[in-house]
Length: 121
Image (cartoon, rainbow, N blue to C red; front, side):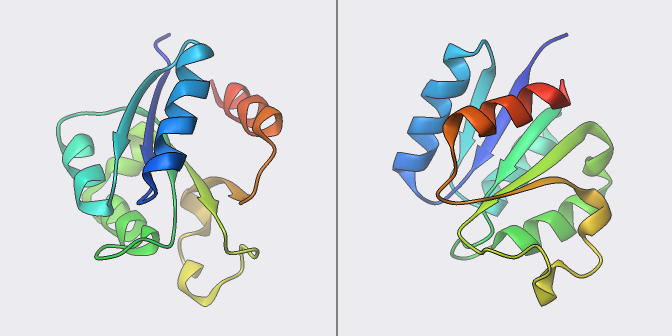
Protein backbone atom coordinates (compact mmCIF):
# COMPACT_ATOMS: atom_id res chain seq x y z
CA UNK A 1 0.00 0.00 0.00
CA UNK A 2 1.32 3.41 -0.96
CA UNK A 3 1.72 5.78 1.95
CA UNK A 4 0.78 9.35 0.99
CA UNK A 5 0.66 12.43 3.17
CA UNK A 6 -0.56 15.90 2.24
CA UNK A 7 0.66 18.53 4.72
CA UNK A 8 -1.35 21.76 4.77
CA UNK A 9 0.17 24.52 6.89
CA UNK A 10 0.95 28.17 6.22
CA UNK A 11 4.26 27.86 8.13
CA UNK A 12 6.98 26.85 5.66
CA UNK A 13 9.23 25.57 8.47
CA UNK A 14 6.52 23.23 9.73
CA UNK A 15 5.88 21.93 6.21
CA UNK A 16 9.58 21.33 5.54
CA UNK A 17 10.20 19.66 8.91
CA UNK A 18 7.21 17.32 8.59
CA UNK A 19 8.08 16.54 4.97
CA UNK A 20 11.62 15.52 5.97
CA UNK A 21 10.39 13.41 8.90
CA UNK A 22 7.75 11.53 6.95
CA UNK A 23 9.87 11.00 3.83
CA UNK A 24 12.45 9.42 6.14
CA UNK A 25 9.65 7.10 7.34
CA UNK A 26 8.91 6.05 3.74
CA UNK A 27 5.96 8.31 2.96
CA UNK A 28 5.34 10.17 -0.27
CA UNK A 29 4.80 13.76 0.94
CA UNK A 30 3.11 16.70 -0.75
CA UNK A 31 2.99 20.18 0.78
CA UNK A 32 0.29 22.83 0.46
CA UNK A 33 0.46 26.25 2.10
CA UNK A 34 -3.28 26.90 2.28
CA UNK A 35 -6.72 25.37 1.98
CA UNK A 36 -7.23 26.31 -1.65
CA UNK A 37 -4.01 24.57 -2.66
CA UNK A 38 -5.05 21.54 -0.59
CA UNK A 39 -8.34 21.32 -2.47
CA UNK A 40 -6.45 21.44 -5.78
CA UNK A 41 -4.45 18.34 -4.79
CA UNK A 42 -7.61 16.55 -3.65
CA UNK A 43 -9.36 17.52 -6.87
CA UNK A 44 -6.46 15.94 -8.81
CA UNK A 45 -7.04 12.67 -6.96
CA UNK A 46 -4.82 12.72 -3.87
CA UNK A 47 -5.64 9.89 -1.46
CA UNK A 48 -4.00 9.21 1.87
CA UNK A 49 -3.45 11.13 5.06
CA UNK A 50 -4.16 14.85 5.29
CA UNK A 51 -2.27 16.72 8.04
CA UNK A 52 -3.97 20.10 8.26
CA UNK A 53 -3.45 23.18 10.39
CA UNK A 54 -6.55 25.10 11.45
CA UNK A 55 -5.19 28.63 11.72
CA UNK A 56 -4.26 29.73 8.20
CA UNK A 57 -4.91 32.97 6.31
CA UNK A 58 -7.47 33.13 3.49
CA UNK A 59 -9.04 29.67 3.78
CA UNK A 60 -8.53 28.27 7.28
CA UNK A 61 -8.55 24.59 8.20
CA UNK A 62 -12.19 24.57 9.28
CA UNK A 63 -13.37 26.03 5.98
CA UNK A 64 -11.12 23.61 4.12
CA UNK A 65 -12.49 20.57 5.96
CA UNK A 66 -16.07 21.76 5.34
CA UNK A 67 -15.29 22.07 1.63
CA UNK A 68 -13.63 18.63 1.62
CA UNK A 69 -16.83 17.12 3.04
CA UNK A 70 -19.04 19.14 0.68
CA UNK A 71 -17.09 17.78 -2.31
CA UNK A 72 -17.01 14.21 -0.96
CA UNK A 73 -13.20 14.04 -0.72
CA UNK A 74 -13.32 12.76 2.88
CA UNK A 75 -13.99 9.25 1.56
CA UNK A 76 -10.44 9.01 0.19
CA UNK A 77 -8.46 10.60 3.02
CA UNK A 78 -7.86 10.43 6.76
CA UNK A 79 -7.90 13.93 8.21
CA UNK A 80 -5.48 14.65 11.04
CA UNK A 81 -5.60 18.15 12.51
CA UNK A 82 -2.31 19.65 13.72
CA UNK A 83 -2.92 22.94 15.49
CA UNK A 84 -1.95 25.35 18.22
CA UNK A 85 -5.58 25.44 19.36
CA UNK A 86 -5.61 23.27 22.45
CA UNK A 87 -9.17 22.03 22.39
CA UNK A 88 -11.00 19.80 19.95
CA UNK A 89 -14.30 21.29 21.10
CA UNK A 90 -13.90 24.68 19.41
CA UNK A 91 -17.21 26.12 18.19
CA UNK A 92 -15.99 26.01 14.56
CA UNK A 93 -15.44 22.24 14.90
CA UNK A 94 -19.18 21.59 15.36
CA UNK A 95 -20.34 19.09 12.76
CA UNK A 96 -16.81 18.26 11.59
CA UNK A 97 -15.96 15.82 14.39
CA UNK A 98 -16.93 12.65 12.45
CA UNK A 99 -14.45 13.52 9.70
CA UNK A 100 -11.42 14.12 11.96
CA UNK A 101 -9.33 10.99 12.50
CA UNK A 102 -7.00 12.62 15.03
CA UNK A 103 -6.47 16.03 16.65
CA UNK A 104 -2.88 16.85 17.62
CA UNK A 105 -1.89 20.08 19.35
CA UNK A 106 1.32 22.00 18.70
CA UNK A 107 3.93 21.72 19.95
CA UNK A 108 3.75 17.97 19.48
CA UNK A 109 6.12 15.12 20.16
CA UNK A 110 7.50 13.99 16.79
CA UNK A 111 7.74 10.32 17.80
CA UNK A 112 4.12 10.36 18.96
CA UNK A 113 2.98 12.03 15.74
CA UNK A 114 4.80 9.47 13.61
CA UNK A 115 3.37 6.58 15.64
CA UNK A 116 -0.16 8.00 15.38
CA UNK A 117 0.21 8.35 11.62
CA UNK A 118 1.62 4.83 11.25
CA UNK A 119 -1.46 3.44 13.01
CA UNK A 120 -3.67 4.90 10.28
CA UNK A 121 -2.00 2.89 7.49
